[in-house]
Length: 251
Image (tube, rainbow, N blue to C red):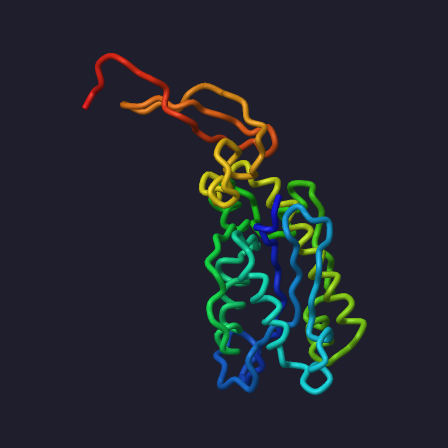
């Protein structure tokens, strides 16, 4: 498969602000706004998951909070992708990324479709929790790497090398687990972007692109009858051509 589907996960620094109290209180004022620390990505079908973090750039020595070059790398990936997959991506990863893109003066990347595995889990199932770690555990696909808490983020913000090493591994494992969860859920998705349109194919599975389809009955409405297929790779169902009909049609 060509590089059309991008799996992504970003990690951000928290906002820094002033407060009067510790528990459930309003922020008086922000001192520093958040920025992106790192992101991990993988093209679906590739073996390698890559991680790019602030220390990977020469500008890091002068300014540990300057994420412009990192965001440029992220924008380039968004611009190439036809489909972007992320867990809670529609509300977090993609919107957060867009926020940094416009902050740095970037134009919108080329249009793409999204698959949010958290939304998929909520739409088709009733898991006790839709968090990525809990889905991985429930589906027996693996777990996220423990971070030890917020100190990992504080350590990265302070430039601690051990913390950065841990953060990059944590980020990488999130994308590895994301891919496993996505592949497990893919066949259930009724609104998955149609790969036949993207890959310019005709008779393949619209969810995974496989040509391994078998006929499994018919999809019936009051006025039509279509051949029904099931993919032998991901399990998704799809419909084909209309079956010739005769006789009285109710109108």
